[in-house]
Every structure is written in C-alpha cells, then in structure tokens.
Image (cartoon, rainbow, N blue to C red; front, side, top):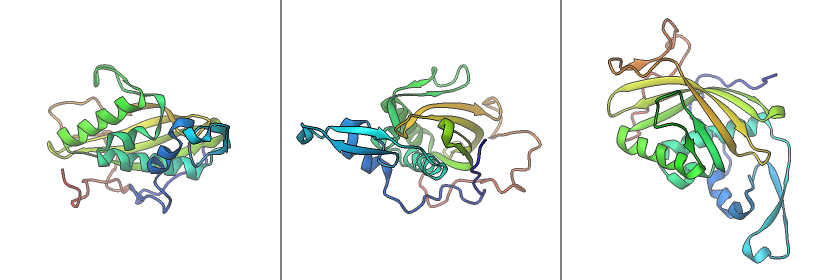
Length: 206
C-alpha cells in the first residue's frame, strides 16, 4: 500500500540534506546511492572501488530523491541530472513524443538540459506517493514552458534500483500536446481550488 502523500503547498521544497548528486560523484565507481547503501573498502581502495550492500528504502528518502531530481532538472546541469539515475536508466513517454524513450542517464540529463535552454522549462512536484517495499513511487508534476507560456500537467511512475537510484520513469500526460492550447491539463479539474501551481517562480530566469 502507498503510504506517503505530500501536501500541495510543498512544491519544490527540498529538505536540509546534502545534495545527492554531489555525494554520488564520490561513489561513481561503486554505483552506490549514498542514502540507501553502505560501502566497504576492498583491496584496491586507491581506485575508489567499494563493495555495496543495499539497505531498505524509506518513503522519506524516495520522496527527497525525486524532489532533488526535479531541482537538478531545473538547474539544467547534465551531470547533476544524470547522477539520480542508474547508468542504464530509461524515461518513457507517450507515442510520438521526443523521438521515443530517453535511454541512459546521460541522455536523460542532456534532454532536460536542452529543454531548460530552449523552452525555458521549469518543473514542479505537486503530489508524491511512495511504496518502499516495492521500490515504486508515483507523482503528479507541472511543466512550465516559460518561453511559450505553455503549461503541461501529468503523472510519472518511478521504479528505484536496490541501491536507491532511479531505474525507470514512465510519464503520462493529462492531455495530448495540442498546439492550439496554452494550458494542457485535465478538463474540469479544480487546479486552483486544489492548490496546484499556476505559474513558474518569477525569480527563476527563463
């Protein structure tokens, strides 16, 4: 059963922990998530190698990982984004979008970096539900394409690896990307009344 729901007014509010992407670089050879595994040195420690023992995920850690991933996307930093994924991570989309799935961590990072640069993209996390026992999570998100004034909304399903990084994302959109619409969302849903974001932060350059 999903156990963790996040309040609507907590859009993009990271908790006070070390940034995972920075920590990840110290363990890059080990393919280890610093929050969910433990490291033991092996004989050639001088090369930075580690033995990884996976430990159970928690709802809080999964939620924070996703929120920090969105912060990384908004930064447009390719390596920072890629650090949240397994090397062979995949991001799936509806048919006909983006020339198909983004395959591998670096491609995911590069694609979202290009969106920030070209479209002025800014994403928010609006709802989060996590299931640590099955390493799955689902979120609602909003995507502001600030250079065109377009707003997209949708859901994403996440699968985490045993080491606590993202293995797979499956994206679902609230509606087709109709070029004649400025806001693409569920018809008749009270986004205002439910407290969803209606604009990207004004202090974030497009």
